[in-house]
Amino acid sequence: MKEHTVIRTRDSRMRRLAVPLAAVAAIVSLAGCAGGADTAATPNTDIDQDVVFALKEDIVCVDPQQTSVTTALIVGRQLTDSLLDQNPDTGEIVPWLAESWDVSDDLTAYTFTLREDVTFSDGTPLTSQTVAANFDAVAGLGGAASLASGYLSGYAGTEITSDTEFTVNFSAPNVQFQQGATTMSLGIVSEATAAATAEERCQSIVGTGPFVLESYVPNDSVEIVAREGYGWASELREHDGDPHLSSVSFPIIAEASVRTGGLESGEYDIIQDLPYVDEARFTGDAFHLYAKPNPGVPNSFIVNTTRGVLGDEAVRQAISKSLDREQINVITGSVSGAAPTSVLTSSTPGYADLGDTLAFDPEGAAELLEDSGWTRDGDGIYEKDGQPLTVTVTAFYAQDVLEAAQIQLADAGIDLRIKMVSTGDFFGAIASGDYDMLGAGLTRTDPDALRTLLSTSSVARWAIVDDAELEGLLQEQAQTSDVEARQELVAEIQQLVAERAYVMPTLETVQLHASRAGVEGVTFDSAARVHLYDAMVVAD
Image (cartoon, rainbow, N blue to C red; front, top):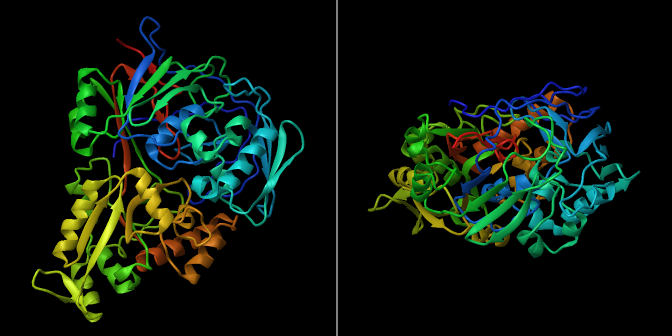
């Protein structure tokens, strides 16, 4: 896949340690202030620096500590900053709101020193007490902040040394917290926001980011405006000071053809989720494409082993073997996407190639089922003891992927039912456990994404699995700082999850957005979420 957007990092005056892509290891990093650099382009001051960015769905909740939905995080990233940042090309962790940090040898204490010049858009300063209030609030939100709570697994409180120095303590080693501190899920909000109810925070937040939320009308639009006096971008950004754009309007446009038509007509400056089938249509000089593979768990079937036939490992394995992932990639028209070869995407630190385990094998699937007593009925669907081999997948996006899989499974004698629901109903199903399989993926720049999905101790668990061997491995990797040792554990976890078919990958998702040619500077963070801080209008 051609990478259409490149994030160029500036020369750094600080000493730091790059994080290998084999694993995100706990490190000690000593940092100074970020250096400055000019951008490759400058905004055209003769024309409006206001852009319209069409979103594909309602954001539901504007608070990045609570949501895991990509569309919401596109907005949330503009409003909130994080303690640390991560280079999406190298995996290197660098300063942001924290100018330096130190990690204890046993991975139970992370000490940070904050910049002294940071304020929230309500005028209040960023202090150690603010960060402590944020982390305490995340712990209080529990399941409402499932991803953030996962990064704070074992959180034992924040010890404040001064207004700018504090230590985040854990009751057990927490190797993933450092990378978690780069994410929007642990983006920092004001003390007033942290003290608000979960419902209030979903409607409005106050952050330190370069933009400020002006309005959110559910199922209609989101409006953000540039903040004056912003001066603490991470060194991974291309300029210092205020954002180039004056405002960004986010109309919610669910129909893909309306988004693409609006981009062509000039009604929209940027659109989210350009359909793969339309990619070739927008490769000319009149448009820019922005493509970035999602790290983490690819689009997959994520199983509930307590429901019906999915408690039978042979059935799960047969479903996985009946998926022709290469063909799904072709059917969905994905030029930028890829067929998955593991239960982690190939862009994820710790990825292990399991192409043989996940190979399309319809004969092997049939043998598994028939050896377990399943026979094909007159309609071609397997049945056993009068029960048809029927499984329902619940999802709120990627219906084309599910339909491609449905056709393949029908050919293999497996009846896949597709249940498309709203975002809220999807997470409601997770909360109640009322599903056979989920159709979804989880974006994270760390292999700990598998613990988040699968561990019995995770508040964000989607798969319902009772497997003591797997649970032990998931917990061990989360407490292992040695890079090579953790890599071995992560590889073992991937093999076990694929072989036992707890997660059945279908497609590696690529975030594919498009803009008109007059818009430049749209970039991605390490989790393939959009930054608009450097974006600008350079031509009329």
